Amino acid sequence: MNKERLVNTFLDLVRIPSPSRNERRVADYILNFCNANGIEVYEDDANIEYGGNAGNIVAILRAENKKRLMFSAHMDTVLPCDEINPIIEDEVIHSDGTSILGGDDKCGIAAMLEMMLNVKSLTDRPELIFVFSFGEENGLNGPKYMDTQQLGKIDGAYILDSSGRPGEIVKGAPYFANGVLKVIGKEAHAGICPEKGVNALCVAAQAITQLHIGRVDEETTCNLGEVKGGLAYNIVMPSVEIVFEARSLNHDKLENLLNQVHLVFKETCSELNARFESTVKIQTPGFMIDEDDEISRAVVNACEKIGLQAEFKTSGGASDANIYNSKGIKSLNLACGMSEVHTVQEYLRIEDLVKTTELITALIEEYK
Image 1 (cartoon, helix red, strand yellow):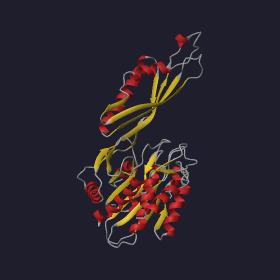
Image 2 (tube, one colour):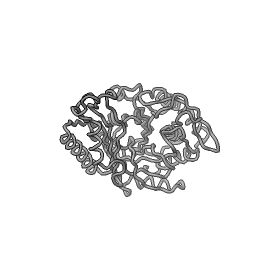
Image 3 (cartoon, rainbow, N blue to C red):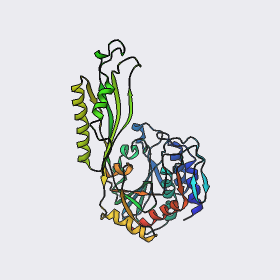
Image 4 (cartoon, helix red, strand yellow):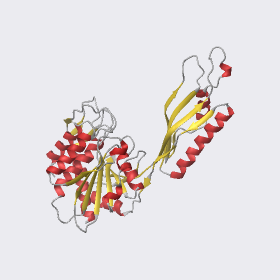
């Protein structure tokens, strides 16, 4: 491995703004990198239906009659990312404090590109597929819109998109539901005839007090994220919309929670002469991979070979692994060192970037 080249690749990548739906420049960087180094690469057209300006980039290092191993990282970042100025201090990379860093998920991309160069000439290795996806941050869209059948049979897949130190392995992530809870009351003049109105916010508040918001149990959470309603200070609020989300590692628990929320709102609205509408539904599938599964044992063995302590965990957040698993590509999400993601305090230790690259390289040995 060339540590200096790896770091410089990461710095190049994070300097490129790539908010969701605008990953074109990062996609071109990857395409140019692969073409310049004689690596087979193509871009799909999954973005046409999605609406972004770049498709998923897929690179392949062929190996006849071998197992097929896949790695994936996403090209988009959250805001603010218009101008990212990475700074290195004491072997830690961070931004200048005015933007995110973009280690989520460009540390995964950099590790994959470096690994390509290190192993492309090896003859005794599995066939390697590298997917660089679009639109992860706003809905796991790359694999969602991708025709994954084009990838062929995959014997093991590893997504490089979890915060934490290398060696941490996300074996499970939640089913995710969201949508809008809408209460429709009745408007009236607030000073002249308020008794003729039905205040939608008051009805919603009475329903909410009957629910368990926040941490429901060790596997389940729910949240009220946005509230919109009202016409003017002197009008009884005729309607209110509440953006709701819920997550659970257990599908049945999530279904039961959604049914409870719907029933409470419906009954409360009926009692208080209001109407209830909902668009809440399960949007993203969850997954859970057994620690004794072949892809789990492979990453544990790879960790041991490079001196990392493997640790399985579950996550409250989703990743492209959720979609890949739902489409039959058994996947684990690996931590690759990103810290304080989605904030301007985000940082990445260079040693974690190096270890991530070493780990995915060591995984090759497990799939010969």
